[in-house]
Image (cartoon, rainbow, N blue to C red; front, side, top):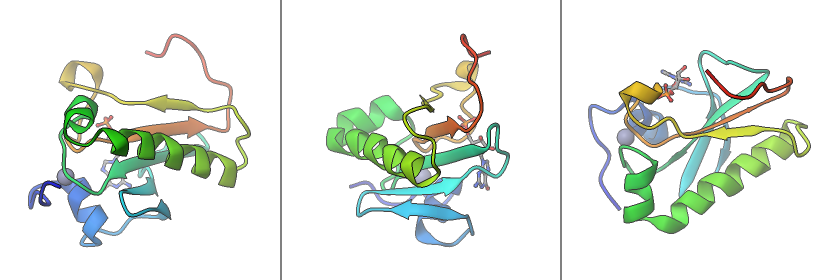
Length: 117
Ligand code: 5GP
Ligand code: ZN
């Protein structure tokens, strides 16, 4: 597993150095509410290990990608979303990625439009 990046916001949330509203944790992932929610439920599920994006995580630690999805499903159930939610990995600046520590967005609790902007 890669070491925490001292300059990474989400590494600091994982280690508890920056506070967040954590809603679920496992040995491999942490889920916390987005500070600027875009839906009634907007949770970020992140690996404990620092990897910059989903593809890098898939190469370094493929089972952790499945752990992210499983954790998102658990939070969706806890938040009462039933089976209706959206999962998003923004990858790259051009796609809207602003934090370069892999994070799976869980969005739900309102009707979802398609395609996303
Ligand atoms: P991205 O744009 O990289 O896909 O998603 C980054 C997300 O992190 C954004 O939705 C943004 O609102 C959220 N975010 C940024 N800083 C913080 C923070 O300090 N705490 C929390 N909980 N979320 C943050
Ligand atoms: Zn990190």
